[in-house]
Length: 150
Image 1 (cartoon, one colour):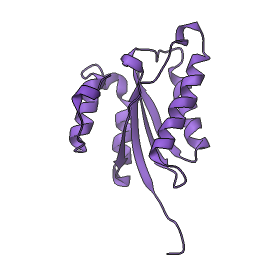
Image 2 (image 1 turned 30 degrees about the vertical axis):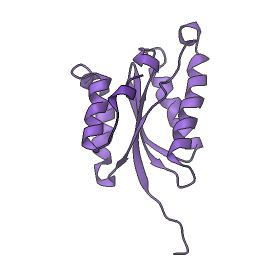
Image 3 (image 1 turned 90 degrees about the vertical axis):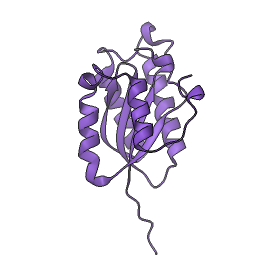
Image 4 (image 1 turned 180 degrees about the vertical axis):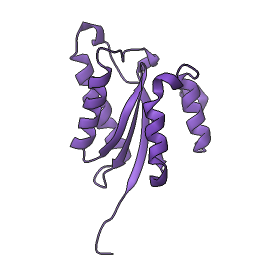
């Protein structure tokens, strides 16, 4: 095949260090926009960015020019520096080391977008830990719970 063709949608989620609720109303919307900008800069078209007070969800079209690990590394590194620049309250901000990244069927993008849009309502009933465990079960991901939360 003379062309390199790719269309891989992903759903990325990761949390703040120790799931501390750093993502408050003062920075939330600007953070979502900033994360979308990082994605665009990496040629990973953001479909929807959102989350809750202790974690982020990004649904995007992954560029064929970047690996998953490099994408996650850049998103977390650049956004962490940005959050820390937003004032004293955020000076000890860090993302947790791990992350979850899952492929998304193009026919189900709207399901993921709706899920991200409803994070506030969703987390009235379920914690981030419960949410991540549900993703791992849905995608049949093997994991060691000893290393999942630290």
